[in-house]
Length: 267
Image 1 (cartoon, one colour):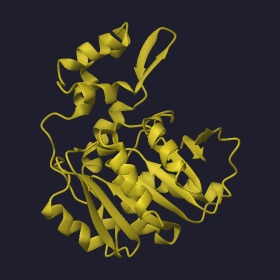
Image 2: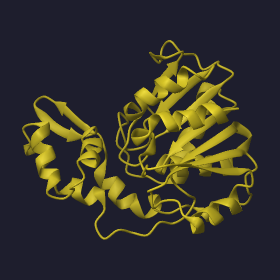
Image 3: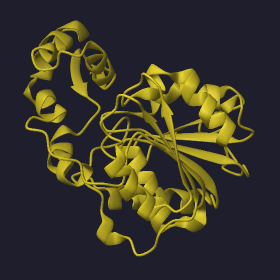
Image 4: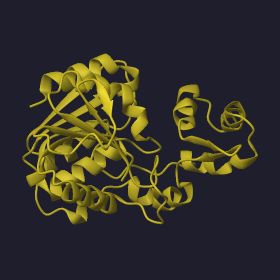
């Protein structure tokens, strides 16, 4: 997995960092996200956290090479292989949406490595399928024929009215040799959506006692009473924190409030 490293309010080159810090936080982005989306947040957390922050590009996202498979169990294995290669024995996790489900599954399967878990606006549940997914809209665009970022945005606006959501998705654009492309393996993501919407409860044999905090947006549909009850069955040491007037991308909408919760609750 590709990754970016932050420490003391600076982004380090990966060569500078030798993975020997006693305090480490992993950040896992959400679906259609990438490590660079978390740049400003990681810098700000690194100013209050006496340790190292590693922000990952998850499978089939960001700067990673494309893969023909995607699921939470596969991504858990990606993380496991990473910590074994780098000899990292203990870390905390901040995971948003898809990254939150990854963080939950990793914690349930490998609790010995996890110090603390922050889950951002997602629950360990199967979410209902939408008639048309975002990935379907992205696949409709003939990206190679687009001449500018504005051209891509105009085509995407035919399917997605939300300008902020389009702006978020456009962060996945690459431009090389005069041709636009996505830094996402859309076909693999499309096939894997049935897994990404769900949560592999069949893989879990134990509950987690790890200190777990779920930060959610007041206006988000991803956390409700039913989902909270299911969450509590898997995570016994769980607290919920609501950010007022925020939706699913609460760390972008309300970064100060988000970082304030992180800074107060980090152990």
